[in-house]
Length: 109
Length: 118
Image (tube, one colour):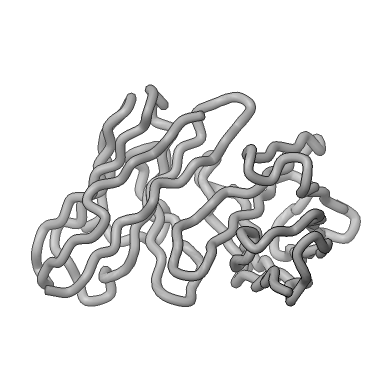
């Protein structure tokens, strides 16, 4: 099975900072990667799909890049509403297994 | 407006069974893959099952043989039959679908809590 490893597990940052979160797949997954944001008590929200496609309605300060095994989610200028937990997810296998990373908690410094 | 509403959660004893439901509206239910994802309190997301438009089903090893996903297109409903439940199955269970973002899960329900305890 493909394993997804995110780093860091948590990060502290300030409003206006640029933040990058990394997701590594245990084997190549082409661009079959998505990123989600989750706030406490809420369902996850899709931010990025196909590694770099911005989901409709998501602010352009969010961007995704990478292919193969290494991927990044970048928030160019943190806003107060961005403090949340972020998850990557892969879907490149058959039979399909939609594996999530363990999550990265983004906290206010 | 796309809506997914889960129901059927509750307290069940270890070894017991429970059936979750997800009522879908606002889209052509029969045309899209559907999923269940769970999250234990304070933990990460775990994909639990998927069902394709042709009724093909998929599970991770942690639930294979114990959980069964199904759909009833005439009722715009998704189900998850959970048998031989364990304490480790305690979680909020979400249904989700992939409508306009390739395979990614772009719509989610609010979740239903399943607690497995004696």
